[in-house]
Image (cartoon, rainbow, N blue to C red; front, side):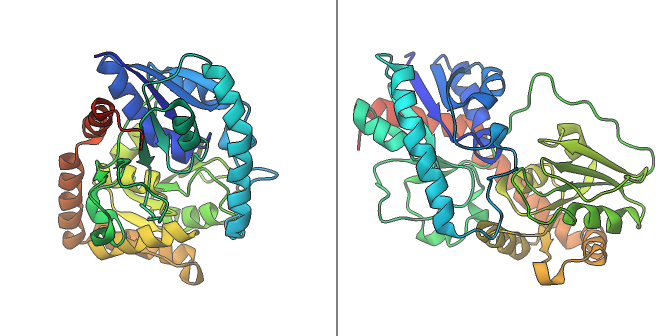
Length: 355
């Protein structure tokens, strides 16, 4: 049956990108899908076949780092205030934008605080979508299912996570007009992607590139922030925004801060990870990556160009790492991705539970 499903997310790449594949899957199944978020993401959302419903966000344009955005060490209470302001600004705008065209169900990112009160206001069921680690809260209703875009083995303290959380693994989706990229001849490729929010230290990507390029790697840096790079060497190139898929197909190592998006992109392609964590959740994910044998963690006090280079060389030459990567890739494939996520959503839609 054709239903109206509303997806909702704060306008940040790390929260919108993981759910785009779900939007495309629901459209393919014949549902009418709207997607409420900041206007800067409207064209990206439209490519999935969903209809953008935009509001004026309090966050910086396009979720890019800049004046007024959060440094990595900022107090958690300040983060909560920022997201609280976003909730208060978005709520009335979205109520007005939808008007009488109320959806049959809401799917919302876990950081999107304006969505649960909208579901209550409209009396419609909802599904949570977690793009990263599940953090349990006494306020979570076990009757509201949660789609988790991680393989189950990557979740911290997974034995404490209830059955309402469905681990579907990453949900890949690539833009129709994808970025083209040609791999260099005879050089190993390393992707350095430290996330699309401000990493605080603009020298970190450059130092990663320095260490890898010195060992003969061709380095592709992906960033949305400023870089202390100077004039890049011929073996270093810079891209802004999300990493072009062709790079991942050729990369032999990914250097990441441990954000779920970059980490899962690498693991889905069977690429080992050098993790340079910067935030609380990233340290948790980094610990699981290390424990599973699919990468190495370099903590801030151990970070150096030489440490990155050594970790990359160790990973790419280690047979046990390759076996662990193959196991992880198989788990990701079996997790179900977008079809599994859509199954959870349709089951909740059929139940019509507004809890």
